[in-house]
Length: 180
Length: 254
Image (cartoon, rainbow over all chains, first blue to last red; front, side):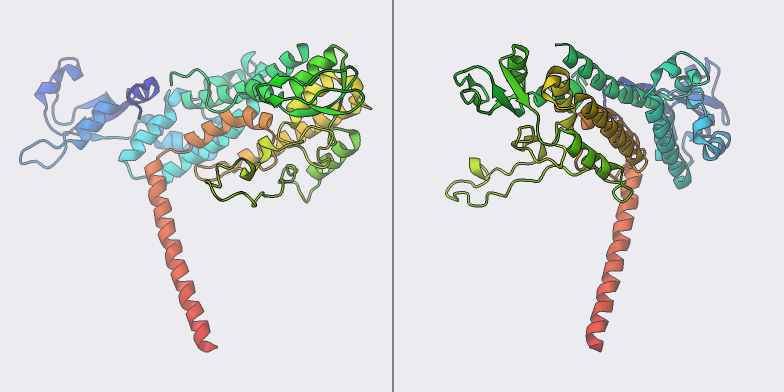
């Protein structure tokens, strides 16, 4: 992760559900001021959740401060839908930086199958993006593909833009070179 | 990050570089040799054909001081031949090959570093000589085929025998090759590559952003991929070891 890259900062700011294993009086501001007890559930940004889940407090108990759960965007419902048909899922509705979230979470969880599924999803959707980026008129002026851009996560949008910019620049050069 | 341009050449830059290619010009007027940054040009004496950089040739063409004779691959017959190759089922997954490389110049003087000697430089597609002159090889598309043919067809159409047919063939070629490239996207992977031998500069510039984005994006969990690759490499090594063992056995039996 690049330090000054706003994209990775925004990726890290996405939230994951955490369950506190211990009472942590010092972190009460996180819970709107009310005390954090054993079993309190909170949605914390990834960067903080990871720190809390990995760090172990000194003392007799061997558990970490919080236990981290998979965010709903990577829950079984979404994953099943993705394995059924990657192109029909609106990833943006799940998480703005869906793949980034998946990458960060799967660094912590050992789930080979989910990794495979995400990679496969990305590949199939990338093909769709390559095709759709060739005629942007239909994607921008609505119709059912008007939702297409709305369903792309931020990384896929950049891909769409890159594919579109490429063919656009070629078109532009062709036009400008025929004029002069 | 701060650089506004994407990595690699943009299509406009590729088009600009294409204008450095030498084309064959048939002058109508005398012109002394010019001292240009890219080297001196030959003096133009009508009616002898002279190689000139494309930009200069187009300028003279516009002033009606010269005619451009199109390269060997840019006529109906050669293009039909190349298009047949591209659409043939047997060669469905390769692009038509780029022009032949010149003979390697291995007789370089070895006193200095042979890699730095000027006549020892090996040329490869973007820098091949004579790709656009009348001496060009007529059964292969050079690196700048798309840009060059476009420039010649728009600015010097009257130097072609049948500009419309050439134009049509070029459009077909472009579409066939684009759809081949698209097929190649399907096998993109974090470690895999698309074979792009024979692709032109403009085609590469067009898809660079997309292909780069996909390959970058596929590096989800790169560390895990690497771990798996190491595992695979280990397995392969083991496999190799066992086959060696078997070879030994064979030897013993003999």
